[in-house]
Amino acid sequence: MKNLILLNLIMLLTIAVFGQKERTQIDDKYKWNLTHLYPTDKLWEEAKNNLLTEMVKIDQFKGKLTKSSGDLLACLEFSTKLDKEASKLYIYASMNSDQDTRDMKYVSMQQSLDQILSDYSTKTAFIEPELLSVDWKIIEGFLKEQKGLAVYKKDLTDLFKKKEHTLSEPEERILARSSMILGVANDIYGTFKDAEMPSPEIKLSDGKIIKLTGPAYGRLRASSNREDRKNTFEAFWKNYSNFKATYGQMLYGNVKEHVYRAKSRKYNSAIEASLTPNQIPVAVYQSLVDNVNKNLPAFHRYLAIKKRMLGVDTLRYYDLYAPAVKDVDLNYTYEAGCKLVLEALAPLGTEYVKTLKKAMDERWMDIYPNTGKRSGAYSNGGAYDIHPYILLNYNDSYSDVSTLAHELGHTMQSYLSNRTQPYPLSQYKTFVAEVASTFNEVLLMNYMIKNVKDDDIKLSLLMNWLDDFKGTLFRQTQFAEFEKTIHEEVEKGKPLTGDYLCEIYGDIIRRYYGQDQKVCFIDDYVKMEWAYIPHFYMNFYVFQYSTSFTASISLAEKVMNKESGALEKYLKFLSSGGSDYPINQLRDAGVDMTTSVPFEKTIQAMNKIMDEIETILNKKGKK
Image 1 (cartoon, rainbow, N blue to C red):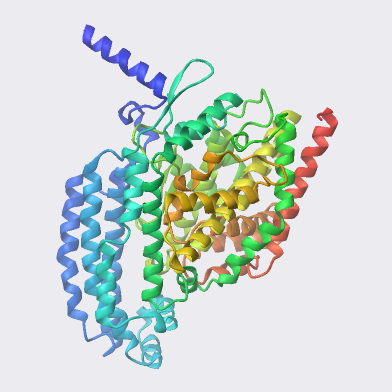
Image 2 (cartoon, one colour):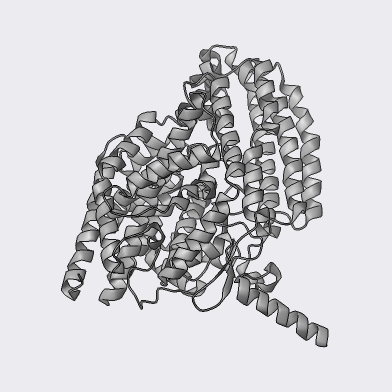
């Protein structure tokens, strides 16, 4: 009994000091239920073995794809069936691993599946070259002859559009086989950052000793105590700096992979290789970077307001996440956060809200942080016949409520697309992926502002909303500019070291935050921040947070103003999956991303919020 009491005491002290529970201490109702995918690991293993057995049958279609429409359809349907099962297998292994990245069992399961899928890619390398060996008119005839091919028409059309970037069968086979080693940099990054990299400890102003894990850093950087913020930033980034060379090699390896793939497929650049298949002009990317740089004065106005509200002589980078209004409690339990989200998203209709409730009640989500759990948040909608899953690290802040609304936006887009579109057309492209999520954030903020009367709380919420403009529009574009720059450097033949990455990142961040204009001071250790951003391993993903944000501002405005047909168009957009190209999907929903109009509307909205904040501050007589 004494030993049991001692063990419990040690566990309680561990939680108090390090601020994080073990997974076993969290109630099951706050954990996702992965048995919806496979009831047991044994059944997963059986499904994997069955996949292996089926995969070898792909050879039966070789040499037949252009002989008849029936053979082509049979091959595509067979491949679709295997792809759907492989996706489900991978989701089960990866999300089990995300629960505790220290558990190598599920990492091993992922690795075994990686090998299997690499082998399968090698086996299917004959498909594209074989189809491209004939004239498009042959395939067009098959489409007219065989109705079942209709769901594959877009993929077939896209294949012929990229004909000049498709290699011969032996070359495709080599490129497919290379997937075994490509992606290793990303895998090492995730394991090192979330599982093996030691975390520093700091002593807070109240005497508590805290281990600075990723979630703890996320919480403490928003502390109202400036000294705690300063110490948090300094300890966290100096610890990252201890591994600067390692992080530099990992990111360099990842960028080289992108450049290698682009050159292998005869693209002019890695960014062109990433955007062209989805019919997104590179000019849209560059236009975003240019527009943000032209409107940095609006961003600097936001930073000046932040400085004014914090009452500091010099705004420093570690002040940016601090609560702008003192003594305002913007903490919400998970249950309270769910209630707010359901009420805020009511304008999207009863069916939409009903599905959100289902996600909350039927364990589609993994809510709280635990030791070893993957940091951050995501929604995974790849389990076509099941339902989407959401990973959170909820810490009771308003930011966590906003993240909940954000991820539920992704979930609803996946849910509606999976139930409306056939599997080959269900997966929407990255360019539209962040529209549904940021749209929900807009509705949540609009709801909060309308229902709050207290000036201090309203100021806090408005500043939170401005922080979203900072984080989603300006910060993500800052990341996008960095990502484009480092790819261009590698394409010029320049190696990326940890020091050089710090130099590039430091120059960009000082320009964005106006250090030369004395808007915000950037401590030297902040240059290491690039190493913390997992999206740099996702091949030109981050810019789409910004473009999606500008699109969602325009679309949400239409829905909130009850513009005729706006809601119907938006829900149709959410249900469209990958049935059309992203630019077309957004245009049909009511926003044209090839123009500067969405960006201009976003800056107008930002300035309007800042006007409202300054009006309240002036009324309160705050200098």
